[in-house]
Image (cartoon, rainbow, N blue to C red; front, side, top):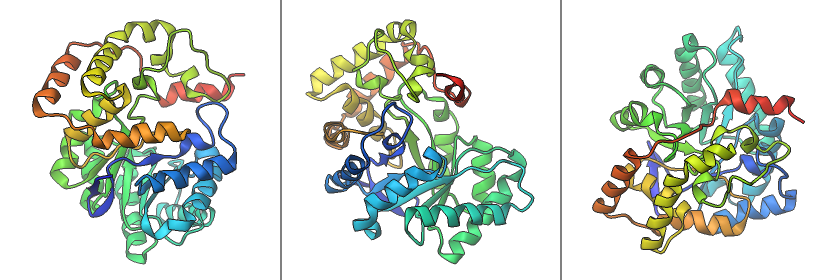
Amino acid sequence: METRFLRDLEVSAIGYGCMGLTHGYGAAPERSESIRLIQSAYDMGCTFFDTAESYSAGENEKLVGEGIKPFRSHIVLATKLHLSGQEENVAAAVKSHLEASLKRLGTDYVDIYYHHRIEDDNRVEEVAGAMGELIKEGKIHGWGQSQATEQQVRRANAVTPLTAIQSEFSMMERMFEKDVIPACEELGIGFVPFSPLASGFLSGKYTKEQTYAGDDVRRVISRFAPENVERNQPLLDLLHALAQEKEATPAQISLAWMLHKKDFIVPIPGMRKVARMEENFGADSVSLSEEEYRRIEEELAKITIYGNRTDKDIAKLRTMK
């Protein structure tokens, strides 16, 4: 794969969001299969792997740590911490969370350490300062925020330069295009879209008759409600038409559009089958001309998107049987 830079960290143009290997989309693969998938991703040229302490209560970090062990020094590893917003000593809390993550990951440093969600807007600078100290200690090589506002990005970056912002971004969710992505471009910060295929919706493989069970987030993500699957068909029609023209798949068109948009955008789709890896990583080879890109933008502007993906909705899974 081609490579890109998240500030000064070089990564593959498409990374690997590993959350789904332990939870979030129904029954997860067997552990041995998940290890094989992680290592297959590396063999296909992926050098950017993403996890978080909150994924399966740390089990995802343990899995990813085991999977990347043979090539740890050749990849960029990202994980995230979650603060409650009630910590008396932010610096101590951040360091404590990191030490726990390093132990689970089986490594002595993390390349990008994200603040997973910003619970307390008043502590943005404190967290940024704590991250700066960890960079000086060599425990992390860079840091980032998730789902941050433009002002939070600017405030944090003024204290300790940010490496990347990881937030939801896709053809179905473009809220950060208005201010955060332009701010990242101005400040030299990378932008890492999670759910770049809208939890798989943009693959075009799901119908309104589809049902979901267990911890599958698609049970509560409103864009997968039967009526919204039907109402969003114009977007899928556009993707299928473009895919046919380019001899690609809808998922590849979605990722190629994103890659064409800015050279500091690095999506991290989640994949649980080798075939999906080959498809998604293959988007790196699907190039759009300026004319094709403009046509997509013009058509997207005519389409209304129904449904979204919110933390509040996903939280409902905890009480669902």
